[in-house]
Length: 174
Ligand SMILES: CC(C)(COP(=O)(O)OP(=O)(O)OC[C@H]1O[C@@H](n2cnc3c(N)ncnc32)[C@H](O)[C@@H]1OP(=O)(O)O)[C@@H](O)C(=O)NCCC(=O)NCCS
Image 1 (cartoon, rainbow, N blue to C red):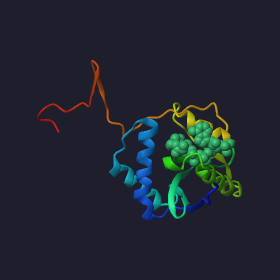
Image 2: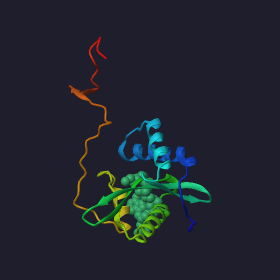
Image 3: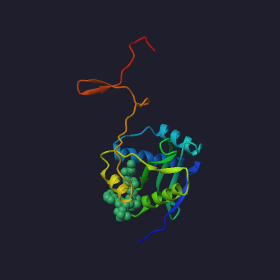
Image 4: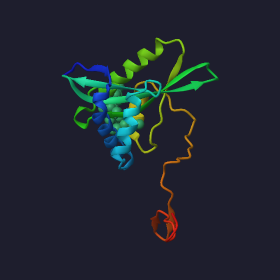
């Protein structure tokens, strides 16, 4: 059965749900438990500042069933903006029913109507075979680029035998 899917921009009142979807996404695809408070703060700041990005939500019968976020990268080579698709998540019970496809086509149409937008990009965990297939089915091409990063927020860890420990200061130091 084909269900009508509505796409709408997220508002501040959607922050809790968007943060929850992000937490589910990280846990499912990277086995990564996110700090809920931190994510909520990150979501709030996007919702409060359009320059940072925008969340688009997919609804069925007024129930939010999926999301993505768009952020922006200036390409000097192309003299235009790449829109980055991030925070992609569809509720488990709604998968395989065209929810992401609806979100993707909505964004693609919007982007292609703007003369200063040169394309869409995203990154995906190398182990996420399902998502990679989905993106290719929607017409995205796998590039030769790989992602490198320095993550200032990552807790520093030292290897001790088989254990990883976070360094602590000696007594009396603060
Ligand atoms: C990846 C994800 C967003 C796809 O959303 P979805 O709403 O289920 O996808 P759709 O139903 O719109 O499917 C789009 C296309 O991909 C195909 N597809 C969907 N799920 C697929 C899967 N698991 N394996 C292979 N193809 C798949 C569909 O058949 C459709 O192609 P078609 O139109 O040619 O038949 C969803 O599975 C999800 O939220 N996964 C967990 C989070 C995640 O991996 N996010 C991406 C992080 S980068």
